[in-house]
Length: 486
Image (cartoon, rainbow, N blue to C red; front, side, top):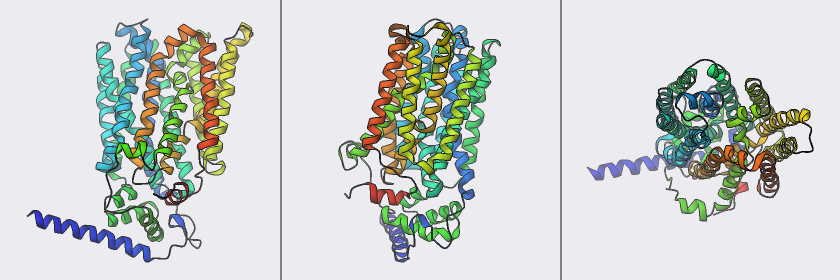
């Protein structure tokens, strides 16, 4: 019996190799399956699937901001008002769950594929939202937020990788910006829905129930979305990869896409990628670049804005509702600008410009806290600096790192390498969320904002020296030209 299974498997592997050999013999007129005669594949074929995947980013943004307007009501109802460490835990426990989800995201994708991984991502979000909505004490809230966090850790990784692997090269940057726009829309939605929380008793529970709806839609719509052809080919399912390419690109582009894929992927011969290989092996430099870039993204202080903008604006004498609307609009406008500029200016230019703008913005916020500024101008500098900071972040530092790194990693290690890099994101994010209010109390906004500005300056220098441009290149072209041979 076992021998028959082995024979069947070897026949399956030979079939995959036949596919590869057949496509290798086809003349490839240009990369990414695009010939000069027929032009680029229609962006419309993959557009709906990009929107479905972006629901994961929407949920990430929603849960990132849902605490902003509701934290005061939650702390009153669950009896931990005034305990800054408990308030920080409600925020940061979600990020701790995100670290767990992100750490295992690569393993999950490699095992079950993107469609099932998205559905697994939605499940803890539904369960966690329900637990948070029905929490009777601090521990119930923390457990619910931990569940939600695991889904948040899976979601951004899956969305970025899926969008990268199913998008035509000429719009991959634009489609990559959709995840950031979805995040900003989720953030704005959580702020708008959360406005009645301070006046209406128990409204914060509604805010958590609402988030279960897009999570359920994500699980449902993924059932009708195509699997990544890169994942299918890596698993030896070349015929299914061809069908997926036909669905995503159209019939005339399938042979070129498959021929190109066969040159960089070893269909049916996927190897297990060990952590030691990522940290100390051939790809250690690009993993180091990715991890550092994500760490600097969070050390810029961006999520202190999203988590605690209501608290900061309240101390400046500004209505939290008005301020949070402005934060949401600034985030959306910056994300929309990134969509327009990503494939025109390139990833590196946007990163440098974004971090530079964030330095200026943090300088304004630091100046507002100094004794050199009059009290009448303090509010304008503080609020203006925060809005400029969000705008500058969402143009480049927000959407670019995930897209850039998912492009630079070879298909064999892409999912697991992204999960390792995003682990640094979640670790730093956890400590920023946990310690921000405490540091704000102990060292004050002047020193804290100066520290954030310094990290932004370090990011500018790091990007100039280490980041490579990937604009307009296919994934296989990037792998061939940007990575040294093994």
